[in-house]
Length: 300
Image 1 (cartoon, rainbow, N blue to C red):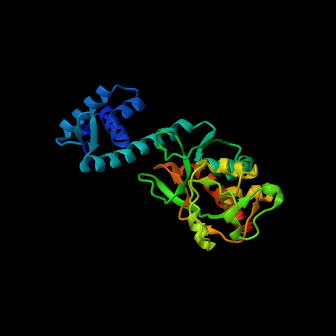
Image 2: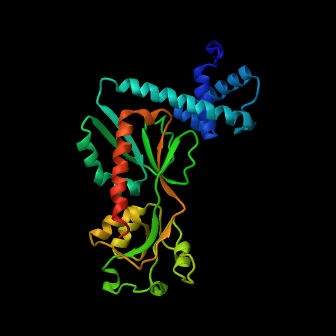
Image 3: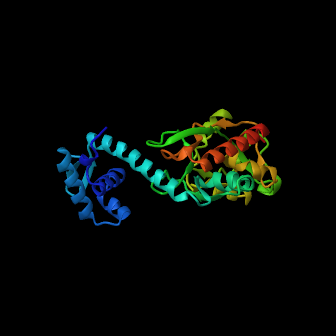
């Protein structure tokens, strides 16, 4: 076992970990409510104690070294486990609290409408739902579960694939007074709404010789894109998971039978130690059942 008496000062370790994560001393200082000079002093002291440089410095710019990056990754995991253990102790004797952070479109259009069933099954669990598209430091921000859309690469976190998704075009039944596109070729004369997800893969699957739409408004949030389509502004390319309820309600109509799988997936992400919490296990079991029921419904 390592000699804990030789462990560097905890304040210096926290200062270094924050500076390494942000790659910026000023942002680390803001996070820890310290000055830039205090962060710099703490990091230099740690470097002197360890006998090597953790950052390369050019004026006020800093760049972490390879040794520093490896040390920061280990330190981040260790601090995350400490935070999770402390949070578990705080919750003893209290109602269990579950903090879930999900991407906005999934949180609003899929998760939130179903959470009532989880609360009915587990009245002892207080659920806090946050909507965020950022890859947060889950442990540091006290988040038990992150539901993310991506490729599953979340360093220092446990990530489990939940499900994939597919894209297809939708339009309001009121678009152009009901004169909706009847075949993919009709999209040559349609207004194609833009988002962060490109049209090109679907256009190729539909064998359409159309360029990627350019210019005009770009929607970064799928909920806003769907709202624009409902208002009749044009044809939107959307994910099945977040638009299915709007189709079922008759607010949107799916066009054609061509769907393109996304290269991204939904992931269930937890910080170290959080997966063993009873409220997280209960939520994961419930989510599994909900996803199974949703998947059984198939595409609209």
